[in-house]
Length: 286
Image (cartoon, rainbow, N blue to C red; front, side, top):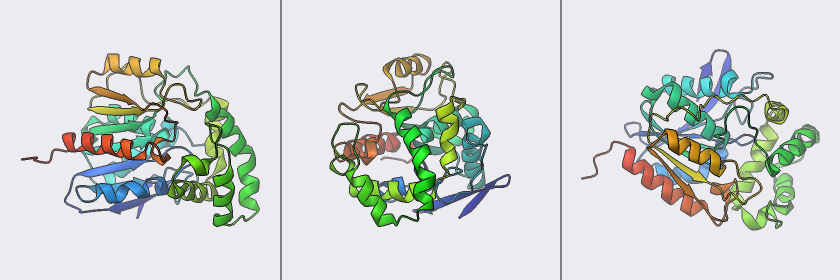
């Protein structure tokens, strides 16, 4: 289905019973709703599940020059929640989707019951995402337009990604679930590569304020801080915990930024997320 924020059309996928508590899944930058497909079957026995393609991603409209938390991602998420009467809902966000979820919770606490943040960016505005992710973003930004213009078939791109190096020095195929690589390929072929410009240029102003409390209970599932692509750094996690006593942090040793994609960590992420959601979904557990 389509939801509009002004003139920007957002692709939204809804699964599960309409009368159940709502879980909204927000993906990371360069990804799409497909990254959460594996999780839907685990959620729908208990929840209505709403997945959103961020602007410039998946089946949503492109919006050149308007890619940022303040410029679009947070207002877009709020528009979806308002349009679908989701609130108060449960938000689950990875990376960009995690930063968006945290900002929505601060700006519209009436819409949010609890949040799960998967390796989210929580640093103050003056700090940039560093490590290997910036190198990856720059490579994708430079190569993706040519790749898309080449007309490469989806299955061929899956082969290329499967053989590509991971941050551990192995291949993505050795580290990630096959469906995760399939979702990654699909998202890359649909992506507006300019979504990466604000991140690379350092103009991506966070909408989440790490010095103000999160008004909803939150579970942060963080990557291993020794991983070169870890986003939720220990100092940032400590800062958020200091301001928000209802924040719980689980750091997964050995996990990279792509926690729910990883063969080694998907089930643990799902276990933590499902248990936390069940505790805070308002459903009578007697």
